[in-house]
Image 1 (cartoon, rainbow, N blue to C red):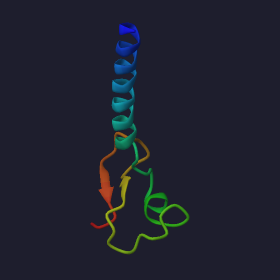
Image 2: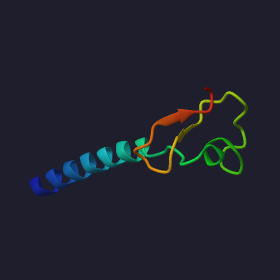
Image 3: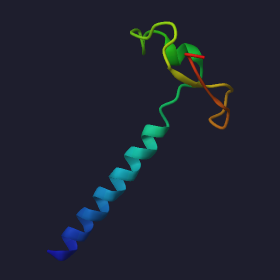
Length: 66
């Protein structure tokens, strides 16, 4: 029984950290994908949609509102 509790705790922590990593990775690779249809049709001019300035995820992150 104790092993199952430890295993569930470890699994829950792993899922928590995985969710945080996936949340950080939700930046588009270009402004069209970040700020336009079909993904984001509700976004209007000046919205703070974020995208990478270059082709790599190491590039600076830009915002549609700037």
